Image (cartoon, rainbow, N blue to C red):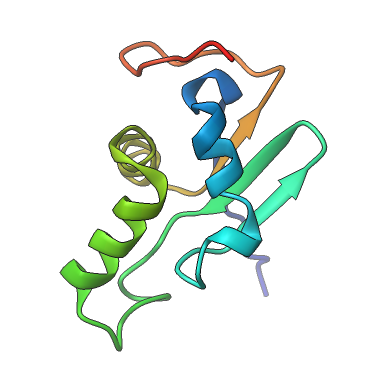
Length: 105
């Protein structure tokens, strides 16, 4: 049996605003996302229609996620998904990704 290996897109925490960093914490996600917080970053499991929300109305669920994380994080999650990643990890020491906004805080 082969182990399941999942890809992670790693990017700088500068792609988050300070408010977003506080909102993405697990106690503020209202059960819409799986989030793992670390001392210097946060990892988000990218919602998957097949695995996470197959019993829910997709557009309603995605709107709820968008309301929580914002357009910029949705764009990064979409990019990570297109790259075949299941997780998006914001790390303070990671590189910034071109074509995505950054914030100073």
